[in-house]
Length: 187
Image 1 (cartoon, rainbow, N blue to C red):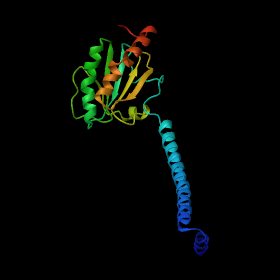
Image 2: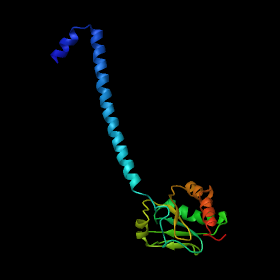
Image 3: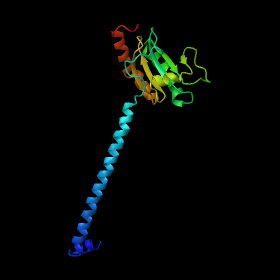
Image 4: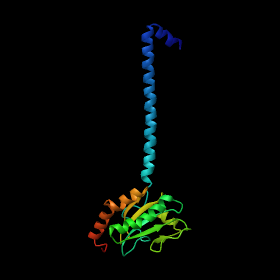
């Protein structure tokens, strides 16, 4: 410290303050660069893990447990104590009916339900192995399966607006049109 004081003592007070200010700026710049490097490494590690852990089934994979040979299946993975799941379960049949397409809704739960489904709804109860097999990590999650048991689309549904977009804003119709062009649907 005496060496620094002796070195700075050779300059005027103004020059000494300027040198100390620049030294502090250089030290802070290196500290900030180190912190930014750490943040970048953490972000890369987090995104790397997220991208390698797929959410939902892989497109084109087979899902014979969920498919119907008569129509395309819109499978929804849901949980019993999930308010958004309840809203999505009630809204999906109405949205599908509005498309005027032959699409079968299928609701899949990992546990036995205490609530009773509507008579016209297809429900698979107590099927946690399907959640594991298809990589469903969060609910509600929608999966579209064609008549040849292939997964055409897989997407988490985080809101009713997302469900409406999934069904109404072209994604769903394009899938149906491509399936129809391949001769996989009736209607």
